[in-house]
Length: 415
Length: 162
Image (cartoon, rainbow over all chains, first blue to last red):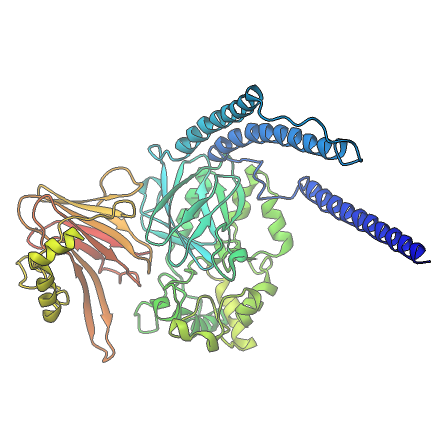
């Protein structure tokens, strides 16, 4: 009787193990299948295998053969391990003859990987030096990272019509077919700038200037995101590079240099300007804005923000995104229209900016209503003792719906 | 350790204690003349080389800027708002000179405006000093921020904060 119980117990255990193994195999197969299918996605703007500029192409030319070699070796090793595990598993057979040392085999297995790594190393070094080249730079843009957005400022470059510095954020606008040198730094913690279609990653480190060269072959939008963990909203620190034809880039520059125009009197936008002056200029600058007495309005983010800066909102509606490129300023259909435009029509569509019909009202109003609810930013006033009351992102300003209505009308004038 | 013992033997530590009592690094006297406190024992070398944004050189009485990543000599530099920017001043002209950054003015609590000026110590030919700029606001129209060398007229590098 006792023997029968023991047998049933063992049989039950074996069945449980077999069931568990089936579930593990199913789970692993499911994950592997999902990963494989994800690789087939067509709408993948951050695909590292689709270079759209010479710098990314240099990387691609290295990574593809290396991936092929590594893949072949990986398959050989994996198959060898699986064969060994199954073929030589314990079936009660006698222990085979034991031997020690095989100099010829060991030397061969050392020399082959060493040769492979040497070849890979030589080409990797050559790629690194190619990417570090800056002597043929045609344009300079300063890039400053901050929790959790990117600021771009264009120093004076008369050959591109940039007669005064231009400052913008979220979207980096560049002329296509131009070797652009990004001078990267950071205001707070280490970030990393990465637009896969245009070049590899380059860290932005406080107190240092790192050089990063990008170039786009054709007009279009190229997506990227911060790739160095930088705090609460790291995943929301996105960016887009917008490449325009040289003629369209000149138009963009001319628009960015247009002087500020205050909204007409007795309009909702004018009331919005007043709200902006009372609330938003504590951190956000709009170049050229003046008070009623003619004094310039200079924002004071250094008094309110840990990092001392907030996005400059001059010409906000010439961009397609806001809040660190986390949200679209364009609604879904208008955004689709810009993103899917061909090279010839892209410039006109991008330069038309954001109008009332295309504005993503939902997200912009939501942002003005309660920004920290849409993007985590350590903006709880009760938790700011360690920063002396300063914010790391936009707080909830407690605006009324009427104020939001006015502000949206005003922001739409910042073309 | 040897350097520390040698330094103590030469009286440097006593000198530093004296400097602390006088608070002479608080006396940033940024004129052309030598200051009793601020210019005492100037540091003449900079170890920071990899994180320098701009070199400002005084060459044969002419002030020029070399910005990392930008080819050629510049007469204006652009620095990000509220971001420490390392500038190394190199004196390549006979005589002692300092670099002075005139960064506008700031409002004090009593409503009075105070000029914001930072400067290096006077350094002789062949020496260099670090100046860190951290400018929270852009300049007012018509009042650009500048880098100048007292005693040299007509030599100025404009600092633009977008």
